[in-house]
Length: 408
Image (cartoon, rainbow, N blue to C red; front, side, top):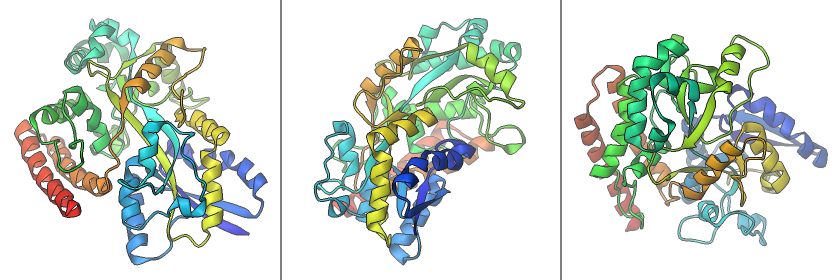
């Protein structure tokens, strides 16, 4: 029997492995000679292990999940197989045009990953808490209105509703990722990189304002870095917050346990609005699958990849984790909740992807190292806009050097 190692990100928290095992029952029935072993990696450990396997050899995954904008970088570094060599008639036409470029090595027709599922970030809120704090839902349309809502909820809504914080933290790692701040940057009219990918723009004034908006949530205490006892902070759907950014459908209410009552109470009051950017621009996150170039069983690995990204299988898995299939019309939420369906349809129509630059994965690491230093400042109550400006300028200098090196 052939064994395949599938490395994935924590798509559904602690349920990632059991839900994927159940999802793969059909694959095992169709391929009785293949056994799939599943391992969950954090984005950082996934990146480090893939790079180590590409540079130093050693055992890595056979099939791997990755943010779509890592495709070019990992392909250039030799970590991903050329899928066109495994399937000479491979056709990307079934996926939306916006996702096709995220499958290729930048500037070439070579395909190194395929779309699995997607998210488009929106804003969930509690109707009851906003009403208690005197906040009109329409005011959440802009970032300034959103920040004012956080201040009002801190003063009037937390104690009444028994909440811990105004806003849930979408990043459980006590850090700030490029994807966390990207829609904030766009909401202020800034950008991360030049359209031609030759230089950074995140250090410029408009982009700085967007990143500062996000850090002000952390520094003011509106968004927690940690939860109680140092664990990941609870979210809106667990009854702990009034506002939450998310790219997925609401999770199911727990069937049992101490969180069930709070979750049921919160769910009765949940509504949704577009990401607070004025014109509705938001983040589209696409999660792809690739075959590791180091695999000893490329044909079997590609068979698993093709099955996972197949129409029925990918739609089933996306639904199971509350995400959306990587297909045209993916934002159709269903007739059972027309309000939420409309918000997601609007989000998908205005969503942007982080660009799949040839060295974007490396640039992301540079950017996030700077963000980690600022997060430590927040934890020590030392964060200032001036510190942010200095850190962004330093990160931009390093990013521009990397971009110039590869351009030459």
